[in-house]
Length: 285
Image (cartoon, rainbow, N blue to C red; front, side):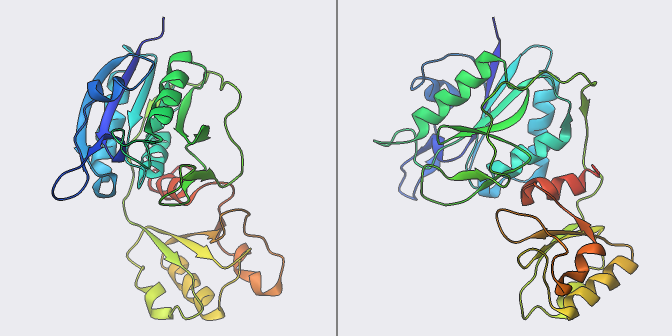
């Protein structure tokens, strides 16, 4: 028999109407009343995921690590706004984690008519209780999406998430053979620079105090020459410069003459922005 633990963190799935608007209010036992499954419950917090901080993500990672001997799998209910960030954090913090961890949430509260919350929670619990998908994933919109490449695509539709490499979990993921490790970030000094045609040299150089920057380039790797020169200055000052396309799908490539910066900096392939940020913070090369 597989032992599973439901960890609740709030989010839309647990929201109830109040005079001030929707607020998380349902606990794990309340959510399970709408499900076809049952498991142990640990109510972590009742918060909107847009205000969740990395220290709280670290707490969740520790809860998983500290309970790994007691449980075979975990389900985490979470707000959708930052669920991909939490999944990415956990995938970096829990290396070779030999348990199933499924995050889920919803676009409408569980108490609403026609909500997607019931289906999403049942998919997450079913996945956790099969014990066939080792590692971290998100269950939403009828799909399982791996933590390394999942990102939120829209604010309203039920199929709110997609993968940057267009792949989904459709077959069991084998148990890792390497020893599981719990890691903590090496730095939080990681900036994100979104290249625009009018981005100034001064804005880029203001990131000189960062340990690293993730630069989101135009198309397959283009940027104005002034931006490329400024990034070279950052790199010379000791800042690691990672590059990724602003496009949802595809990678940076040295196709055009204007893409000379691609060979100067560190390219990112088939990973979400969320995962890349934490991969850099955890110094996972």
